[in-house]
Image (cartoon, rainbow, N blue to C red):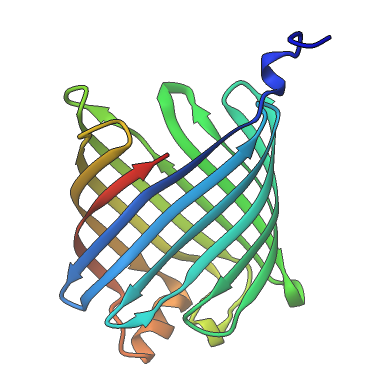
Length: 217
């Protein structure tokens, strides 16, 4: 009957540019982007993600994902789809499966496993949390970690724990949809990934000062 549809069958969408920022460190200046968009119902959504950086005029490792999200519990979704890496070496394509949602105490968590061409495997974990000083002034710590199952020297990636990134950003929400921020980010490479970075003359540990905006619509 007209007008008798369940609310969870309605379709919604959102584009979130979580981080659009300029970076500065002893290794040089650059830019970084972390954004995602989704469209669908409460139960099923198409989810798109991009996470990458540019440093000293060169595009660095950039990750793009197209995922199908199916709700498996309140605040949690199972995500399956494809990931493609470009920049920083030859492109790599992966099949992806993971979860995304809010853990107890409102930590925003993403955890994904990947299987790639030639038997490559990888995993990525990310968590962040909003600390409200006021309704508009918000401190957001976040941490990311990447793991790989085998060496990929063409992209400068080693097996095991490859990279860790930890950030602390303070934003002011001029409106709920627009918030400038400043912050500091620490990045570290480990194991064979660190050895590849040293051979290429790149920093293994790096601290960045960042400034940017968070926008959603």
